[in-house]
Length: 381
Ligand code: V47
Ligand code: SF4
Image 1: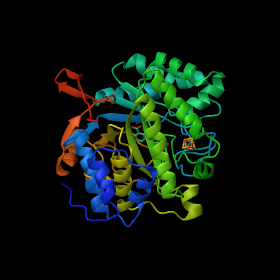
Image 2 (image 1 turned 180 degrees about the vertical axis):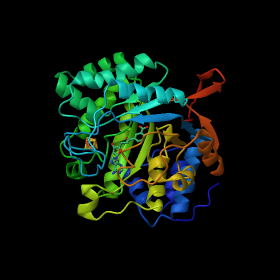
Image 3 (image 1 turned 120 degrees about the vertical axis):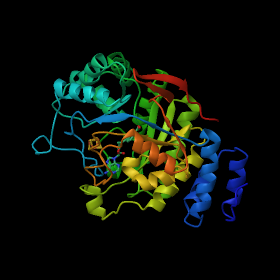
Image 4 (image 1 turned 45 degrees about the vertical axis):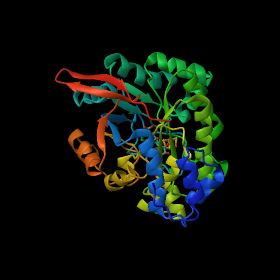
């Protein structure tokens, strides 16, 4: 039995205990600073443990951003570059393959592939990134491209979303990451990334991916100009698609890192506090009742907050991670990579049981011969 005393939280606690869905109005109550954070966390932890017990999942993964040159100018982005800037780069096959080899040498099961939209790159170049990696390293799962990229590929090929996704699957696409979601509500989206794929396109892409049997992730970029009702709207839109398709595996709240960004400079925005991070995680866990997993992305939260987040709704800490640029360009001070020993230690220190998973949530079994996919992980409803 929970020790909740806040009168505001009482009716919501009763719904959560009874396994009932929370409304948008409930979500706004949870966002209110009048609801004490520890009580909110306790409630989110009830759901987290109901779904995933004491497990905390991680994987051995790496990132590749094949180019940082981008036609768009999202105001929150410190990663993008213009062609003429010194930091601009564009990888060739050899560089891509070298990253694949490094991933295999380090026991990675997954490569996260996203990047800029280079105005000079043809669709075939993007396709080749997936194809050369998949051909050379077929055991490496390629979690690649956001709806923003898929939308760009549709423009380049003059084909629809289904065609592009099927073509990428033929090349070796295994699933899709959660990026490009930002904040769906147009009041915010039009200010932070007005030109790229809108929320309708984001949902069309994920719906089509789910119809084609691809699993996908989802995110929300918080801690900038958005208001609580924008965040609740965002979560409810995700919950509605999940009701239809069941294709989302995980939700990852992403805290805005303002360093080297136009948005940060213009509005003098500071990075959200750990208290905001934990409240956002807890509210997300309570609103997304049909999502099996929530990720505390340690690269973005910092290790300490990610550990606490495992008691505020999160059951996954992402991976060992290698070659992360998006957050480090925007001021993240977390290490570039964590060893398996360290990530397991971080999870144990938080009082949870570390379990290595693959991208599609199967246990990973390792031996001196290498690794293989084990039992599927099923979260309780
Ligand atoms: O869409 C960009 C965000 C996202 C900044 O699916 C920023 O497993 C904060 O989606 N401050 C890309 N956030 C990262 C992403 C992701 C990360 C980890 C795991 C998974 C997964 C997906 O990063 C972008 C945008 O929302 N972002 N710049 C910034 N300055
Ligand atoms: Fe380009 Fe993506 Fe950065 Fe937007 S977030 S500017 S689409 S790299």
